[in-house]
Image (cartoon, rainbow, N blue to C red; front, side, top):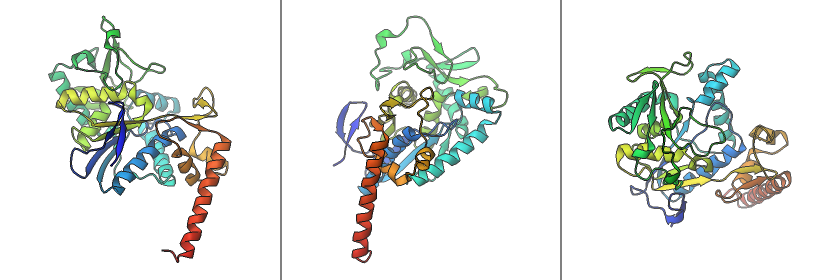
Length: 338
């Protein structure tokens, strides 16, 4: 019997899929304006362990993981580097595929891209406009959370603190802001110099980050999944936005189980550019560690507990896994490979 801690109920629950022996999982993939760091891979690794264990139990797993290659940060990075968003996304995507292979992370045969789901995003926006949940303002389309029952239920947002006046947030994300109390953007109705914009039935523009996951989920998995996974940051805004959009359109629960992994910290401090302590796979490889050392270390503690990466802890974990591998090799050799 498999039990999962459900972030929605905040309790452990027996796992029961919607369909017998078949499981649909959505796992938030990387934003491809920059390379994934070790903290990102900790999230992808706990998801990998979950998928492998479900398959071990005999379930058929249909998993969707996505590349977020259309967003404000990507456009800013493209302008800064003087490159196209597609070039940057392809380069980061190659890094991701190579490094997940090194870490033995299983991936679906196809990884969805936000840039390939623009028509589906437009369809969802049209439906939201028709239902009166979304509206045009200043050439953009916004979603009104106040028209959705139980908005913010994953985070358990206190709606009494919602502003009385109309507030609109037109960026995809806002640094340092946990919750944007106001209407959030679905469609950027401007032409960004041709960098990332499409001619569509609702005009020229691009889908916001907030509508991209619903577009890819509905296109590849349907209206409902069994498990929705991600990092703990997704509890703030992102997954509640997905829930509000999906459930207001379908009238059904998006997922029965929500899983969120805790942060990887370095020497007791969160990773950040300002601290200069963001670590990438190649940084640890340059110190002599192998991918199997890092996989073992990143999965060595409970996924919902913070993991503190220090040199001594990484060395200790590396010695443990090397000794285990040596013992397995000796036993296999002694048994004639059986």
